[in-house]
Length: 232
Image (cartoon, rainbow, N blue to C red; front, side, top):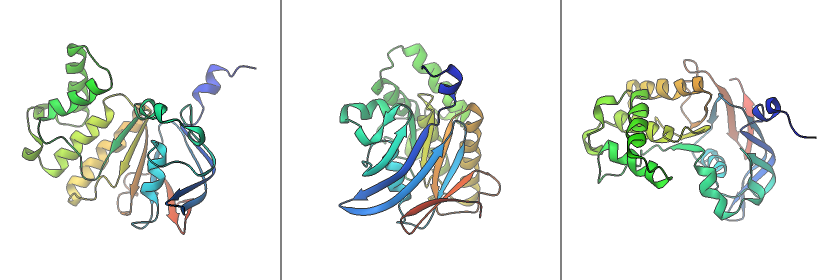
């Protein structure tokens, strides 16, 4: 019997059941049960080195799943082929702590590079999409700036704009406020939290709990090789 359209739409973006993650034959995480739905904001909290980044890297195929059942979108990570990874990553926006902007080109051309790399060819559509995402992150008048001319907060906003380019179903943010002062970090959190209104899910790894009260979301604690939901 075929699934109804409503059932398909309600399918979780991420569904991990009793998943194990290993690196260099060592168990990093075990018995991971995690379901993430459209439009959710999820914090991965825990100490540095607890396994938050390793878990996030399994979402986009950087680290393989060692056991259990893991699905993201329509990809089964247990049997993910290398040739499938680029297609998986096109549905995910990734934001790094250190921005990772290309230093040899301005903001507009940083974003244009990404769109061309994923197959966009129409220059008018490219210009329109870049304008849209820069407006979303409050960087409309900064498209001509080079990365070294931007503050840390502005660079992170450009990184968020880059993550939004392909209208991803999921954004992964790995310690995105770690290098920012408190006020700038708050501005970045406001921008990130706003995208869930569009139905995009956000998973943010952090060891800083100070924003959780003002920017609520589910909390998954990573500790002693386990991941469990907490409201603390």
